Length: 221
Ligand SMILES: C[S@@+](CC[C@H](N)C(=O)[O-])C[C@H]1O[C@@H](n2cnc3c(N)ncnc32)[C@H](O)[C@@H]1O
Image (tube, rainbow, N blue to C red):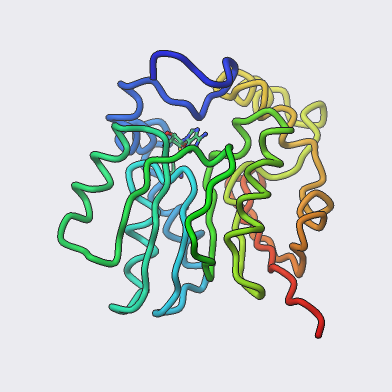
């Protein structure tokens, strides 16, 4: 991407990083990412008939893991703004009619004319200014079925000044300033403003990463 929409964002990737995203992640994590991501996707308890929206889906790595639990009736819609990601996603799933890619920004209003059983946003939402994250949540609330599940896989909540010095150094070196704001917010409180509650969470990577599940309230009769 030549011009960033949000100048300080670390989730709007350079063309090199977008083309090599999975390889770079595997190498930078010394191969640990693979096991971690399998474990966290398993935690989503995907049902064979689920229709899933993956916001900022990247190469389709998470979608491929989710798809292993789907029957022929299940579907995954991957959304991303990057043309490099679109190519990789479509290449990965070219023979799989359950998978579709939509090139679309997740941070502006959109209407897919469908409500989903599950929506995942993995390592994307921390990379936006806070008011933009709220726009993403409006899209989520509109596109989730009542009783549907929203998953944020991203950094957990923690106080940066309480981190061990080395961890803080690494986090500040590799992450963008938006992430520093993301980790210090109360996400259950924020999500509850969008009719999302019944929270469940799993922590990974020394509790710095969290899969947070929230359920969309069903309307009272
Ligand atoms: C750090 S990568 C994570 C990719 C994937 N979710 C994963 O966990 O492997 C961030 C992704 O978000 C996408 N992205 C960034 N800003 C976006 C936006 N405004 N709308 C949609 N996708 C966006 C990038 O193109 C990239 O694929």
